Length: 558
Image (cartoon, rainbow, N blue to C red; front, top):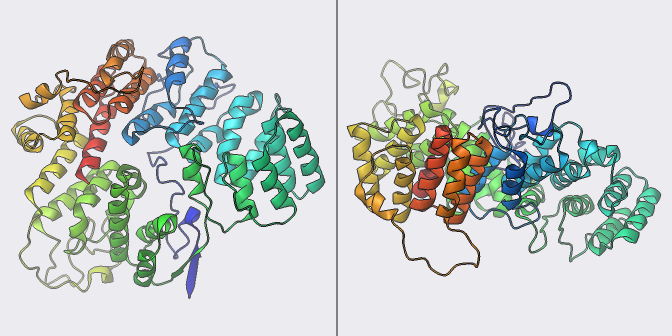
């Protein structure tokens, strides 16, 4: 028996496999917070709980508009720093009453949604706007929702928005949207007529070619390179099993959405055989197969190997944090053996980034002491209550035979290098906010001893949280000669005055977005991380400051 999976739905590999993420950068937080009571404002809907419900009302409309306008827009190349974009996304997706003076400001809400699309991607923006009330009253908000929906293949939702729009229906975009919806609904005559109306307003030859291919049942044009969500949806409808490439210069969020499309993947039913096949795949198909294998419950040993591969390859492509947050919840049920502990560092960091501190501690202790040893009176191995112990009633939820083949004793355990344990203890301390005392001071000293810029930057971020740091970190914050950069570009420290002012006025979203701009401008440098963490701490956003530093540590460790 063989099983078929699609890259976008890398979850139908085997019975019991959980739904895999279509976009690994999507939030896996504690839940979606929706405030919809009566006639609510669009700002009162969010998908992130990073900030309190005072996130937006603590700022004013003019300043919020200026700050949002300065962020990367959805039609741009997007953010250059993943660390900065994640920080910005958590603020942009937070819910609360609108900024002062911006009640029912659909224009400002549309800018926020546009910047959320650029920072968080199509899946998060779609989730946000699916829950946003009164979309039909704003062509700008409706367009962002429709673009995200079309790009993700959520054509029913996109067409609903196009049909319900109250204003701006005669704009070329909406004429093209309704043409696509008519075609998908089987009304070819209406589609052609509406497309002709759109051409009379604005030419769109690429769209016309794709619509003709769909309505005339032709092959996908060889030069098809979508530049919009509508074009991506049409291209997928023309060639449902084709891998799609967007045009050069297309927004990053659109390129990421396109990666969810492609041919079905034919994998064997047995996990070990499926892993062998997955190793021979490339690109999106490989990522989807490994993700599905990491989530299946039939063979958690294979799941561990698949997750280790996925994490290591993500780290090589500067996407470790996104993938770790997407699959970190799988670590809890992985068996802890000598073989799986070879990948223990990545598993500890993935669990930490997913907020599972208990599982991270268990794996860290196993790295120090070795895998759980079998007792002679326990044929299935280990005590109940932890990952990989083999207990049917333990937190891992594995059936006893999973570890039945372990020997009655383990050979002498060889611990990982000291540097590995230092970085894991460092990350655990940051996640748990245990940032004082002789033990932590020793870990910090060992971490910054190498004096590399990234490690000094991590320590500088902690210094902003009133953590005593070695003198070498303070020296790294001294002004350095600047190389000639892009004309008009602002150094990271240039954002500090505005950030401190926002923080002291408790303008939470404004503070966090300014911190994100600081990291985007400066990268993982002492000045950027110190400044960003300092203004977050000043605003009472210590958890976000620690999360910023923790993500920097995780990226550097892998």
